[in-house]
Image (cartoon, rainbow, N blue to C red; front, side, top):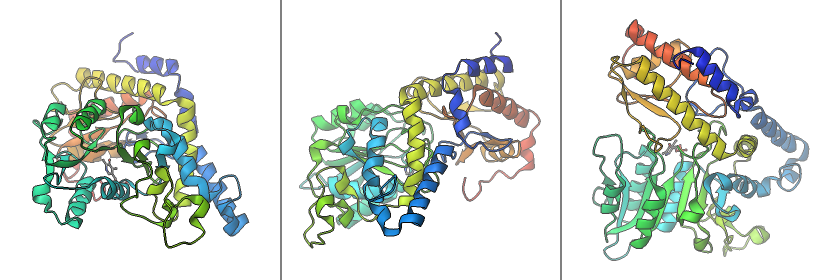
Length: 423
Ligand SMILES: *Cc1c(COP(=O)(O)O)cnc(C)c1O
């Protein structure tokens, strides 16, 4: 069958073992959603659990903390347990709490212990801004100048990082390493096993930001001996805008006092003794700070059911096939149109692809006007994420056809080449 045809795309959809899960989501009417790596779509399960929790508040009041289908007091732990398989953590190593950035603050406050010559934090120049801001402020809090003490490994081409360059930067002056698992622009998957092993050899604690990988690729944090990790749940996990994030702390660190403490990090059995001496929980639970955002946790519960049914292995398999198909069609249909592929072509690519183009900002606007939801990343990137749980091969086919028309007919010229407030 000719791979360029829509029939071929439909044939791939017919063979897709995860195809039925699309029905679980509220798809946007007449749109092709390619932005699940920024904000995943609402599922019917998420909606249901959110309504369940509203109901427990409505019908139980304060007793909702310990009664009802999802007692609030234990929710962060139970959601953590459900997320654990997605990161390859044990159930006691994962907790649902905070946001990506607040969790990073917590983990740096805990694991960054400068002493003697070891005072620097190692990150990379392609990292997400919020992570960099957090690291800068943590350095300042400890009295260090971020200009000097935050080391950012350089990218050789502005897209990718070389693991060897990162390892070269793991010097005797480094007290902590924080890296992304998947780069948010290019989608490059870093070799976490290798980086962790090299950090171990040098006695440097290492942690990863999983925002762009959780729910898209498999992880083995415990086995790989990663010290800590943190993530959001609103991207591939479909937990909803501002849904509660998560963190992982390896079992070997359990029992240390968190850098930032609050009463929800207490051992639950004594939390309500109201003592002024904290008895921290003896697992990842200790890294919580205050009262959980119960209503923002609710949709995550429903969303995770779908991951359990689909399994992350099958999700990754389909995701790789979707992006491979995307890249094949781009190669065939968009040659000579001024696009450069900015993601890795091999299996070190994550769940999204990156198309670079001089007119990227207005191409994104034109795509939106034509019913395709991409996202733009300055200065010249069109990110497109075909999500295994709800996108089809036909979505990919249509997106490429629309892109072709937009550039062929210069439809983007109707728009300004400038990004919106939320790009
Ligand atoms: C999405 C994302 C964030 C967002 O942080 P929040 O605290 O959830 O707003 C941070 N880091 C990376 C790498 C991200 O992809």
